[in-house]
Image 1 (tube, rainbow, N blue to C red):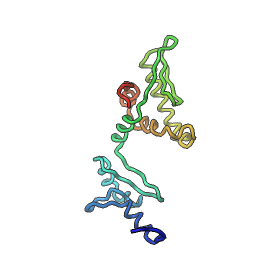
Image 2: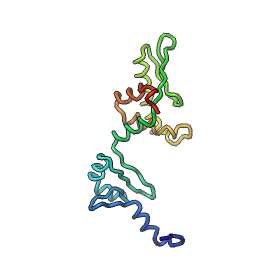
Image 3: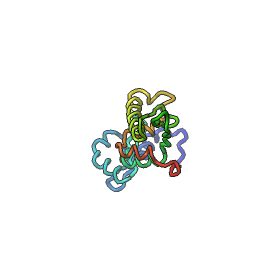
Image 4: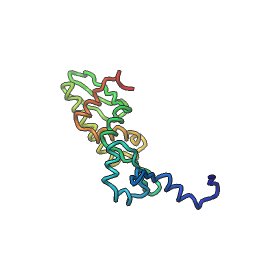
Length: 164
């Protein structure tokens, strides 16, 4: 069917596009009310890997299991950390990001970099998320916010040869 000037069908097509029901299971929730009413099911579906979305005010939001999102982000956004011996100590940085760490030992520099990343993520969420030279760092902030210390350290130390 061609829409052309047939605006009267728009609200039905929007609903049909965003609400997918298989049997009695919905994966795409057209309203936050419906998503709230079915929150346990929505979260269960996201947890097992189904694509789940919620619509609000004409925008769609994906609901994704945090571990799944973290693993994928770490895979597609390698840290490429640079750690160098410098002046009797060590310096660690992520090229292109305004964070660095330093310490007397390699591990101390990595720990300091992790602390700097956590502070940056906090600042980004509070005020930098819309600043032009910071807004595209959302993927790093997601990684920092979702990762525990061991996961963050593993991401930082991932060998460059394994990165894409």
